[in-house]
Length: 174
Image 1 (cartoon, rainbow, N blue to C red):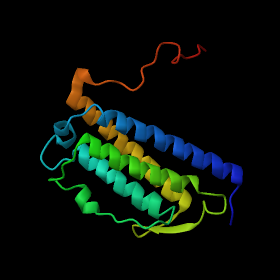
Image 2 (tube, one colour):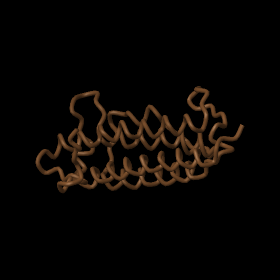
Image 3 (cartoon, rainbow, N blue to C red):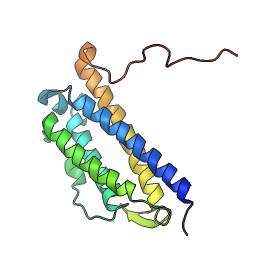
Image 4 (cartoon, rainbow, N blue to C red):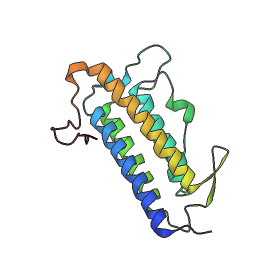
């Protein structure tokens, strides 16, 4: 059963906008971090920024590139969380950019005829709409982890991506 084309386009456009915002935040953080910083773990057994970014690539690959776009990928989910995983910020940006571009292209191809199409992802029965919702919200959650870990590592040296200049935040008085 096809969906409303305008509603489909609005949903997909907003999902892509959110996904792009998150991608840019992660890249912004990676560009501030050193090799040591991206591989730092707050405690033994915790994930590093490198683990989180590699996991994001695997997740959007499986849920969006493969699940939505139906392009086969290979994923090593346990390897995404390996305690011996090491990477440089540049490697992570390159890997994340490739995953982002492939996932964004898959989302861009969604139409009113495909948005409610069934998909089987990680043994879950989903629709294309559900797969996009899952992947984008999952990406957003891990984006906040990367921002927090970056701020913990850099402290006062952290450079914010955007700071309100003044009038952008206001409330009407009742």
